Amino acid sequence: MVGIYMSGTGNTKHCIEKLLSVISPESEAVPIESEKAAKKISENDTVILAYPTQFSNAPYMVRDFIRKNGAVWQGRRVMCMATMGAFSGDGAGCSARVLKQYGADIIGGLHVRMPDAVCDNKMLKKPLEENKRIVREADKKLEEVGRQIVEKGIYPQDGLSFAARLAGLFGQRLWFYGKTTDYSKKLKISDSCVGCGLCQKNCPMGNIRITNGKAVAGDRCAMCYRCISHCPEQSITLLGKQVYEQCRYERYK
Image 1 (tube, one colour):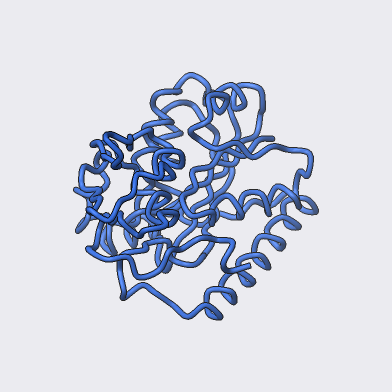
Image 2: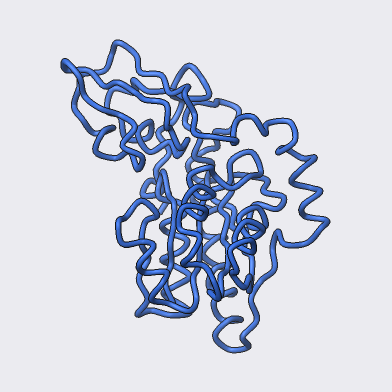
């Protein structure tokens, strides 16, 4: 077994590592941007693919990765795990349907609520204690799911039903589909940037470079919010115009 994950602020990384610690402690969790990710899939019969939902959809980066490595999924047993701030609909089902096109056997789907990772939307912010409570509840769910898999061989089926697909489609995806059809071109970097290079270092897409002492964004933003949550000057925004909270999992432990 291997875990492959996309994680911006650390939520999804924590969740997949937590689940693996219960069902297969010797298994490795590999970031999707790693050069060895596809090779690890080819070497394992069972894969957990984990990612945050974006507007009730799997991130374009995840769908792009599945398609670019189409051959490795044939015959693989895959569980899709989607982390979400509030609502996911068929977050797990979105990538499951793509994986089936490449011959994967979908054995399960799991939705895990975690603190919202959108740093530049005030409406989504919660008190620190509330986010800590959300993480504790997520850990309980992951431990219970892990026990069910180990003891009974039962995998959860979150987000895989037709009803879940309708919920995801009409709940968010239909209205915001344009935001997830490709990589984003809307990452904004203000004049307060000091060119420290943390954003360039953290970007999983290599979408940011330092030029003449300032960060410059390209057009392949995966909307993971990793650069925004780490910028010491809060110089970077995406969906909003101001950073209200730098959302990182380690704050909620």
